Image 1 (cartoon, rainbow, N blue to C red):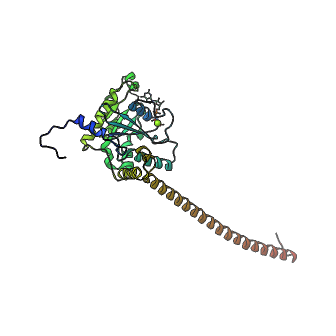
Image 2: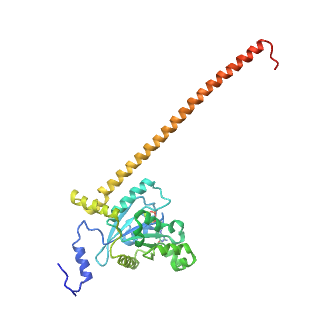
Image 3: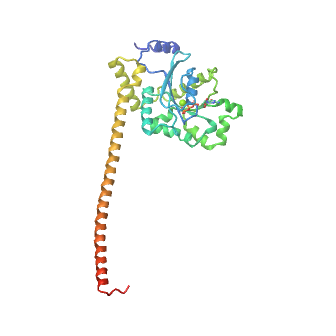
Length: 313
Ligand SMILES: Nc1nc2c(ncn2[C@@H]2O[C@H](COP(=O)(O)OP(=O)(O)OP(=O)(O)O)[C@@H](O)[C@H]2O)c(=O)[nH]1
Ligand SMILES: [Mg+2]
């Protein structure tokens, strides 16, 4: 249906219609990927956003998890919680697996990479977070980053504002200048829904500035294709398809092949070392035999000389 020139579009009505027409294949209208250093409050922030105690708090999160929540304007908001970066108990291999799952849960891409920071514990690692996001998800991801300061209650109690912290800490300032979506402060008070609505407003503005779409790249698009295939071929719903699809399986297979190759290379290196050691041992044994023969010769010569009675020492 073509639009008549000059016709008015009721945005609220259009959104509602779009939501009513949603199918299990549709990704969420707004998706938030929580990311940050271990223990900064990601899971707590996730719970505030979805208004439920869904994500486990105070325990090191080890897997990626998603929870959706309706917004007052009828759209759906999805929050993806992730394991903390740095100081985590996960191995590099486990981290890779979780990253793949995270991409699948966000497909076709997140609307924001929400970097959760605990202001009092701001460190060099937090400062590097935008760089890490670019390395993991591609350079374009930087335009979709926003800082979320947890522990707003403590900041309020101590009379510290983000502006003041920025003024006194140049590296804090430097970090914030890299978060193209700006920042938001959360007070750890679940009753205050305004702070969530304000956050969504800031995300909407950032997405509009970026062309009105979520962040995506080949990796997220491939995950989205795999999810759609899973839904149409296996007949499962989107939630199930996001957790098990050909994209995840392919990355896991590749990781297993890489791990096997690494183990084989290690075994080959060990064998080479063992062979070298064996060769050295054989050469040493030969030298010892030669030396022993030499010593025996000397001993017999000395004995012969003694018997002749010509020994002076
Ligand atoms: N006072 C206060 N405490 C908070 C706030 N947010 C989180 N906490 C506390 O900080 C601790 C860590 O919170 P989590 O939400 O588990 O942190 P996380 O980033 O998910 O931790 P990992 O999963 O290990 O990376 C918990 O004891 C929380 O209760 C906040 O806004 N204010
Ligand atoms: Mg957590």
